[in-house]
Image 1: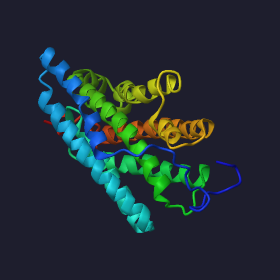
Image 2 (image 1 turned 30 degrees about the horizontal axis):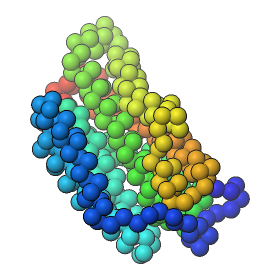
Image 3 (image 1 turned 45 degrees about the vertical axis):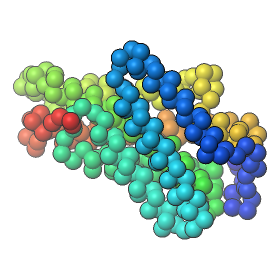
Image 4 (image 1 turned 180 degrees about the horizontal axis):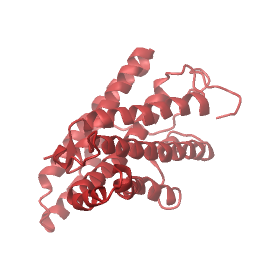
Length: 279
């Protein structure tokens, strides 16, 4: 990541030293899931069906995405990359609003726009200004960076949305009392909004606190396994760490303010009937 050099496809052919894995080796590693199943049976957690479903679904999804990415890397055209990014953002936006116990009409749109503004924008800025890839849409950089951003940001959005909607419904009498005493909608909900944003940011802040000390992040580990110099891998991980802190904070703030606007009408009244169970 030199300060004055962009990366062209010919300049950065990776030095791959990883040991190839056969499908039978993958199946052998899959038997480790039985340990989780044993815990579920032993403690009567009733998660056996979920474990099987998650394992099968995750395996199929990863296998498919591997072949799809190989095709995208081979085609390497901007419209294919942009289409892949759109699909990724759409799936992330849906996952973000499916996790909270409550939701409202328009939540998907808010999640989608928030992820586009925070996720796609920062992924392109990092890949083109910090890393300086060439061409700007290089899928080997843009798609992995966007994937890491979306995975972390959707978690923050989910936690923030769940917390804020809970405060606006369960504690609605407190908000309405403040409104009746002359407070504006912002004054009545400012603390709840701030607490919700804080809750959404806690996971990424905690993860950043222990990075390198307790955990070795996936990107850094993957680069080291692929034969990259550990110092270079750490540099990339630092960029990713800063990127995830920024996007998660922007995502939480974005969804919180979008929700705030949707929960009050033009007369400044709290419309808690707009919230309904996500089940």
